[in-house]
Length: 109
Image (tube, rainbow, N blue to C red; front, side, top):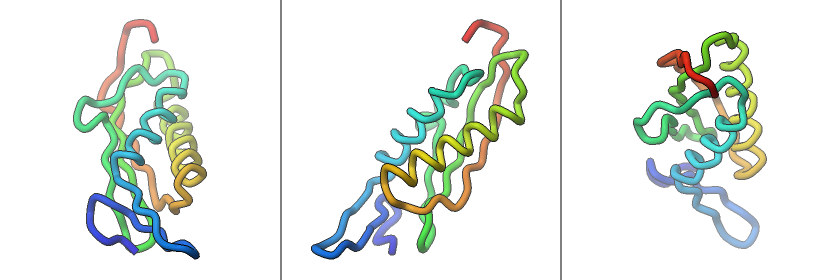
């Protein structure tokens, strides 16, 4: 299904749709910013990396969380939000969303 590593191709009745990985990064980033307790994303490629499988897309997110919030709960919320947003907006199946908490912020969100 994947034509090259920058796009995921979906075959439709009247043709095909190519979805660039930057589109998926933008969708995931927007979903992550809606999660309470997330301060920011890792600077590397907006904090989200995308890899395409044969029939699914995998994401890896690096983020900083606000001190006092449950890291595990935030990670679960990020996984759910990213999967839901990417699947609903693109129709692509999300294989996994790996969350890397790379820091804790002592400041206010």
